[in-house]
Length: 234
Length: 95
Image 1 (cartoon, helix red, strand yellow):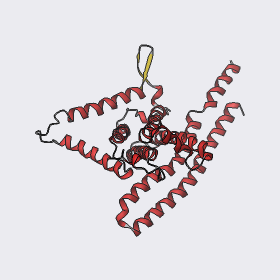
Image 2 (cartoon, each protein chain N blue to C red; image 1 turned 180 degrees about the vertical axis):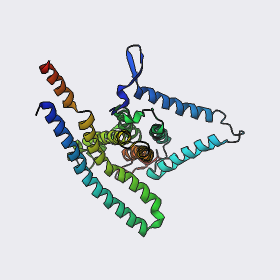
Image 3 (cartoon, rainbow over the protein chains, first blue to last red; image 1 turned 90 degrees about the horizontal axis):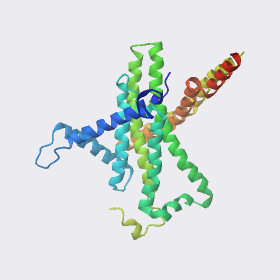
């Protein structure tokens, strides 16, 4: 039984073997970029919005309102980062219903890369809003004793992000495959429907957790509430 | 029993133990979280949207411990790191 799509090679590009994970990631990226470019091609005020553009606006407005409920900062970069993560993961998870399509989020490599990007983005947002000293000071926030625990917590949240998404998506695929050999035709369909639900919820949770981590790194400490630090929140 | 049979038996037994014990804690925790959230919604129905969103996120975080156990069980069953080593050692000695 295949636990990951990493081992199935689609084609080889010179010395590099392109496996199903990379290839399907490219497919999803191409689909997302292509649909977005097609929809926003005629983005002028005099053109009336068609149904595709309305759908895209509903999606983007939903992401904006969800982010605004979690964090008070009106930072559009959070929308770009978290919205991209959410759209990629939700597309990858929903595409599991297509037979033969090995979704890239069922591979630990993809989810580890996504979690690593969150792990790198959190200090970048923190340094961007509080400065290097202010961000590093948050590691010794209650006292210096908490320094190793804060560092361990930073890494463990990345690991848990990766393994949570991988485990949920992979378990859906594995359970469907096991049920196909035990009770075919009906129960795998039910489990796939359940997998759709968990896939969308896991994408939402990944995005929400990334938002929470970023906003907790950028949140101003209550003691250092000076006008100078408050001016970068528009 | 050969080495391979011992490894297979212990792996399967441990996978079952992992999932069963790993499901106890998250099940209790999720039940407590859901019942508390339902009580809070019954008290304040206006805050149902915020409560259910927080409930979903916290349920997924509680559930992730069960998912870790499931991943470990799947690794033991389908991608056992000791199986291939023992298999190649047995083939090397057996001819």
